[in-house]
Image (cartoon, rainbow, N blue to C red; front, side, top):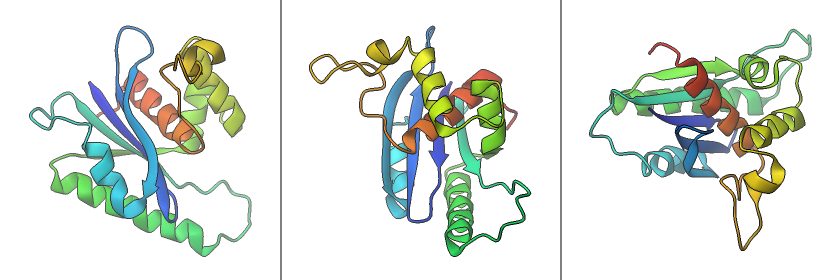
Length: 166
């Protein structure tokens, strides 16, 4: 099963293409790109001959009951989430929309986990920081993963582990 996971943002989004294997999974593509380019960059790593073993997931903006108003950036992110879903449907795919709290609960064991906890959980899954990231001359499987790509990676891991119905 191949997984594309997208962590949408206001103007740019992170994506990960994960090819699960017997260990933690092989990242065949990842990055952060302007929203207008994310879909094309992500699917460039995918062979669309067989959609049966393919999963697409997009992190869903959630409301956490803080009582605080949200800004335009949240609504812009929601618009891009809808655009990504539409692009997927045009390709014959259905996207799973997953809330951040669900992802954090799965990979960290707590919905209250912070971004640093999510990053650490991903490093642990790939054998610890030294093995997962490696060095410039000897890069590990997570070499080059930065910023919001960690959130997209956690989403891909969630989808692979739970295999939500599509």
